[in-house]
Every structure is written in C-alpha cells, then in structure tokens.
Amino acid sequence: MLKKLTLINLLSFMTIGMAISQTSDSTNFKVVGSMDAYYRMSIGADFDQAPGTSFANLPGFSIGMANINATYYKKNTGIVADLVFGPRGEDATFLSPFLRPGGTSSIINQLYAFWDVSDKIKITLGNFNTFLGYEVISPTSNFNYSTSYMFSYGPFSHTGIKLDADLGAGFSLMAGVFNPTDATEYNPTNDYAGGLQIGYSFDIGSAYLNTIISEDFYQVDLTTGVDVTDDFYLGLNATIAQDAFAGVAGYFQYALSADFKLGTRVEYFQDNGVGAVGIDENVFDVTLTGQYTVGNLTIIPEVRMDKVSTPMFADDTEMKEELSSFVLAVVYGF
Image 1: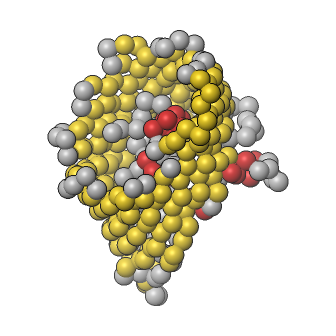
Image 2: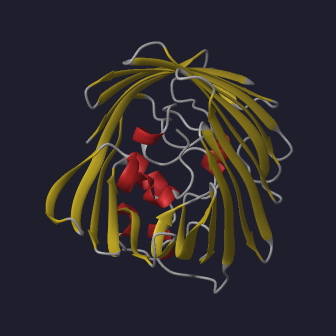
C-alpha cells in the first residue's frame, strides 16, 4: 500500500489505468488520468481561511485538476508525459513559469525517458516527481484529500538523472543528481543536489530512507507502512530539513467494507525557518477522512483540525490559533 519505491512511476504504473493501444508484448502505449473537485468550508473562522498546506485550500465549490499521463514503452526503453490542468496542477508546478516567463511548463508535472538496462537496473533522465515523503501530487494516490505540512513544504519534483537498482532480498537503491529543488525547466544557478534512497520491502509492508543533499541544504526522510491486518493499515512519515522544518505524521486506515474506508492522519510540524506557520512556531493537525468508492469514482468526506502555537487564522476582527475545516471531494481515476 505504500507509495515509495519509485514515486516517479506511481502515476504511470500504479494508478488505475487502461491500455489504449498494444501492438505486441514488448510495445505498450498507456494513458491514465484523473479529475477531482471539492467543496470546502472553514468552521469557526472567516470563510477564506485555510490550513497553510497545498491544494485543497480554496473556499466554496472548487476544482482540483485534470491529469493526463501517457506512457510509451518498447522493449527496454520508454517515455512518460504527465500533464496537469487546474489549480492543483498549477500549485504542483509552481516554480516553472517564474523561471522562464512565458513558458508553458506549468502544465508539465513529469516529462522523462527511461531505460531498463536489465531487470534489476533502470536509468531515468528528465523531470519526475520527488522520491521524498509519504504523500504525492495525484489525489488518486493519497488517502487523505488535504495534504500534510511535511508534503507541502518538501520538494514536489526534480529534474535530473537517477538510477534505480533492485539489490535483491527485498532491498532497493536509488541514486541521482538533480537541479535545485523544483527547478523543473532548467538549472538557473548551476548548483546541483544529490539524492539517495535505500528501501526494504517485505511481505506486509516496506520502509524507505530518503535524503537529498546540496552545498547548503539537506533533508532526511523516513517513510514506512505496514498492513497490520487485511483491513488495517499503519503508515509513518518523519522528516527533517536543514533550517526549514521537521515533522512526523502517522497514517491509520481501516476498511469497513470493500467500498468504504476510514482513515486518520495525525501530524506534528515544527517550522524552523520555512515560514509555514511562523519561524520557531509549530502546528498539530488531525484529519479524519472517509472514502466511498463507486466504480472509478471515489467520494471523500473529510474533517480537519489545525492548532498552531501562534494565532494565524482570522475570525472577524480577531486571530485564532485553531481552525476546523470540512471538505467533500470527488476523485475519478481512469
């Protein structure tokens, strides 16, 4: 159930998909995608107040994004073009239009080529979603519709080259060199970052230790998850980013039936300089999420509470430390 080994392949190969053309066993063309929309209401604060996290934070009835992801694979090489449209997609590619005014890369979530050197080694070059963290950009691959602070202030994407290796006995390794975080079109500073992931998968779960290091920055991240029973799943994400933030979150999910699941995310986030809730401030947030599935459609009611160590949510003429939110979302994946 955990999404980590190669996050960049998640949307291509693990999302609900269908092959629209297949000419032989070694040639494949697949298109998968999704759309999402939601209603959001703040409780006990002004209508436009929202947690300081990414995506599901617009008031009233809102759209998320339309996502089209195309993969072409022939023999041992392939390409992925992942396009996003809408507010969620614009937030996911937030830096692209600012690096090159007039550019169109704000609709490109991922664009890369890959080579399966062997059944144990893969090389990827281009722009791909990050390998750090528990949550991802696509709402089809997250249990909670709103996102955590750790996800929101960590990297979204990298542009560079990476190697994935299956070491056997459940162990895996990823190593890469990338542009500065989220500089997806080109390198504006001539600085580079190194990335490393060590993973271990076993019968009922997996664990991944991730790190990204540059000249003046590092982030270390642990992501793990276990199917405690057939119906109960437990996940954990812990991270620390130099002079930016640190946090830990637990994910608890239980299947009440084949069609309905309940889950809770509990997160503590310390702001050490990123400016999410205020430098040297912290936030504790709890999110209760339901998922009811009808075919490819998932209906997601969600209640969330954020408590910050300093007043930051406006309520008429005063500022409050707490914010409660209600979201009703629909996500369709194909």
